[in-house]
Amino acid sequence: MSTQGCITRVIICGIFLLTEFAAAWQEYLTFNNCYNIYRVTERHSYLLSWTGHSQNPGCRVSFHGYDSFYPEDKYKICITVTNWTIENSELSLTYYSGRGMYQEALKKEYMQSDSPLQQWCSEQDEFVDILLKTTRPSPMKSYVKVLVTASRTFKHLNYRETTSAIIGGIIGVVVLFSIAVFCRRWGNYCRKTATNSSANDTAIYTVQSRHQQQEGLSNPGHSTESTDPPPYDNVLQNYDNPPPYSEIYIKEGPYSRSPMI
Image (cartoon, rainbow, N blue to C red; front, side, top):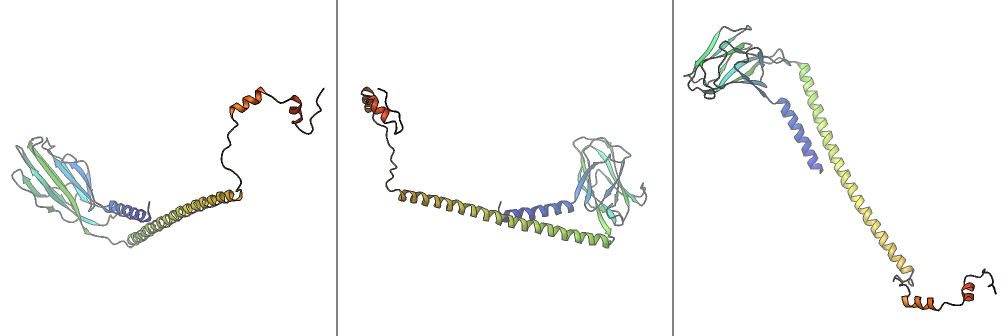
């Protein structure tokens, strides 16, 4: 991998991690999820959906703007109807809000003939309940979708958290820069090593070629041609007419024994 490609990947990974950390996420609910109080923040929203089936008549889905990481911040809840398709069904959509755990103050109510497409928001730090009533279901023909978000109205300044965030950002930048420098140096080292290896191989090949040429020049009388064995007919002739025994014995060497008479 080239140095430029390594640095590009490091930057892309860092941007992706920062985006994932700061990106908002959405949770899906139905109008029958009425057993909890769901916490809403600017990064955490909810989408309520109804597909025309029978609905629990007294089920209220409760929401409150609260962030466990910043408990002193304040929010207001905002509700937006994103889909309002009613066919052969009778229903009503009601919003309640207040300071207590169970709200009685009626804020908004829509019937099947209405078009509740405008956004409605509560007051700061209020709880909000959403109630959907149906008297005649129409499965897979009617659709209602409600988006619940939060808008922060008060930000508590915490200098310790601000300092920690700044230090964390500086550390992140230093880490990314260090990785980029390491990738660049490593790429240069790899290229330098490959170049040196290629140069060494070329030098070794050149030295071997020169050495072979010098050996050929230092032995001008040495013939590189292959010597063939004697013809097969000569071997047969020698076998049919062997030399005398005495000659064979004498040719064995100067230290051979005298022939026996």
